[in-house]
Image 1: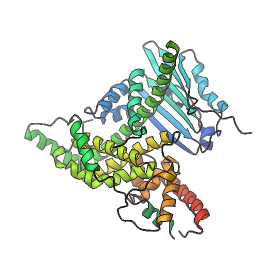
Image 2 (image 1 turned 90 degrees about the vertical axis):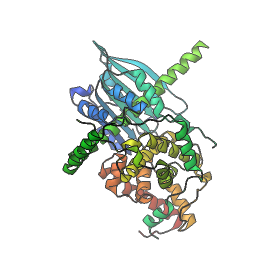
Image 3 (image 1 turned 30 degrees about the vertical axis):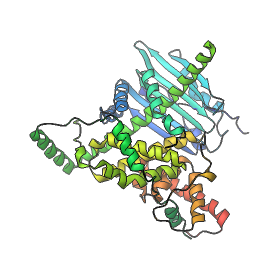
Amino acid sequence: MKPARLPITLLLLAGILPAQQVKWNFDKLAARASDSTEVSLDGALLQLGAKFLSDDDKDQAKIKKLVGGLKGIYIKTFEFKKPGEYSASDVEPFRAPLHNPEWQRIVGTHSNEDGESVEVYIKNDSKGIGGLVIISTAPKELTLVNIVGAVDLDSLSELGKHFDFPQVEVEKKK
Amino acid sequence: MNLEDELRSALRRQEASPDFTERVLARVAAAPVRRAPRVSQPWIRWVAAVAAALLLAAGGLEYRDYRGERAKDQVLLAVRIAGSKLNKAQRKVHMLAHRSNS
Amino acid sequence: MPRRASAPAAGFDFAGLVRQHQAMVFSIAWHMLRDRAVAEELAQDVFLSLHQHLAEMESPEHVQFWLRRVTSNRALDVARRRQRRPMVSLENAPEPVALTPTGDPLLGTALKKLVAALPEKSRAIVVLRYQEDLDPAEIARVLGIPVGTVKSQLQRALALLREKLSRSLGEIGI
């Protein structure tokens, strides 16, 4: 039976070690995906990478500051050949760990234009925000993001805006 | 017909527009200059050069640089993906808030 | 860990670097995106970034590596976003001037269109392999992916291209 179409981008943080916050199993989706991208940065790798960021580049300097307080960043993106190759029921197991009371869903959006949905969850601890999960779904892509540590959401969002190259998407005459 | 040869032929480099270099230089001239701080005392540069040469000869710097550069690329990729998704959600929320206020 | 020494920017003639590498940078973007205006914009942005990072460049080989990596990654980003919002019909994409026109132009055009229709990562691998003549290990370093992934994706891409081309043009020798 063909699964129902769902635009979803799922930010998935798979955590096997306690530092990763949540434990996800990607095997089922990996078998169906045509391609996948993974980023797995524990605290040591994050700090190593941060050392090589340039202080002279405004964006890199901001990223250096952003990752300074983080303990890990874990991202998994699945790409599928055509829409409908994964369904809502495939995504539900990734939401399950986020039903714990320490997690709070702060945003849930959906775009009819491109069929993409984004959910944002934060983890509350005694010091404030202790983690971030983003789940993004689109017809042919599923992205899962898990950030461990005190995340500055505004800085992260602002950097995302810079990296999106909006000027390249607009047709220009030179 | 050999597919790989045909691909090499089809994907040969193409020239950008004739005034491409001039346009890049014009943008550079208009952008603020950013330079890494220079070490002013010649003896410090000499010591740094010798130290760098020794480390390069040992291969240690090259490997640490390679690992560090790889880690940096992964950090940039991670922030790009996460930031892009977060920004998308934020823009949608702002748009909805704007609509409900108008 | 000590910060590595950076080469003086005065050792590089920036305008010379632009003239030397403009075809490479533009062509990677063009073959990835098949939109001349967007490819030129992206290429300009890449050189602007190079200018900002010139002090970090250690050798001409480093410059070339850096340019290939940044151009490929940015083109991949744009290609992924444009997948959902195509700007230019591939049928209408004008052909820029080839450095040394050769081969069957009809076959060449057909191949370029088939390459442009590949999934983005496969497309980048094919472009780096056949435009830049990089081996799989070099492609893996440029794109920051495992060499095994490069080899398997390259094989699949060639098989796909062979199949699609043979359907329209008959038998192809390898």
